[in-house]
Image (spheres, helix red, strand yellow):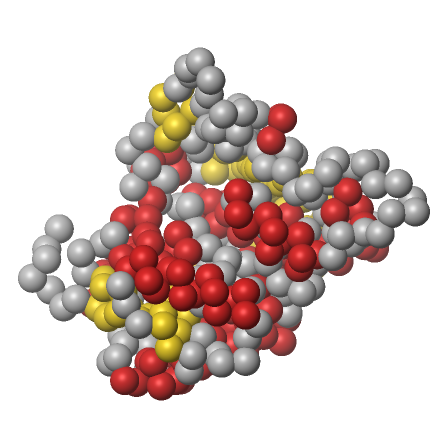
Length: 370
């Protein structure tokens, strides 16, 4: 690690969803948070969260994005508002020549996904969507595949079961009870970290969390997804039933070079697992196979009086945030790609879009990139 290189001044453009993105960047010696900013007309609950974060880091909170970016001489925008505003804040930053780190999902909108890719590539700035590709087990899997340990990959299966609740279980609401609003639930759930797709538009887990297994698949194979078939269900949570979005999805994918893959993704509830959930990668090649537990290495912690929802298995050597930030710094220095750049993020959006269409129609769908 070299600390004599340029230190980048960062603005956190809203921290209402995942403030861990800004925290992860700030933990790297080459990135310094200098301001939190947002638009003046956002609701009070957003201003309150932004102000709290700014106070913690002892930096100003400015209710004017463009003024903050210019007056504080910002190099990097860290974008984590509601999902519908992701692209707007990222594009506005790129137009001012700032590099962008953005929370997931990319966006719920095809038009916005296209707009972001066009603006990022036109402006020439670096872009990275926050991801989990820096976790040690995933990094090890990439090294094994690159070294030819399993030969040429032929088939991949990824389980991404996320063990968090989303309000009452399916069937808990009586028919004469008023359903909970999507945004209202997400705002309240943020307190204990069980919020999911923050925004006015309800989003299923395939859209919210599908970026992670699809990013693994892209990293490990380098292949583009061409066709998908998907089935989805609202199997666990009443909130998802009420808003007709998925908390469980199974996707089959055809990729370049005859490669096939399957992904199972879902928010399966806290009672299903003692920690974060069952997340595994199975890779079959023409000379061998790998089975990777994404959460390893870990240590189990159990004691009397342990809170019911406290994680029992705790990751160690989990330097994902540092690895992502370091990769981003190197990309800025070299002008090269990031670990999950705008084009890769756009491709993942297009795959999810095709999978959701498939789940509605019951037919295989060709992935449309443009």
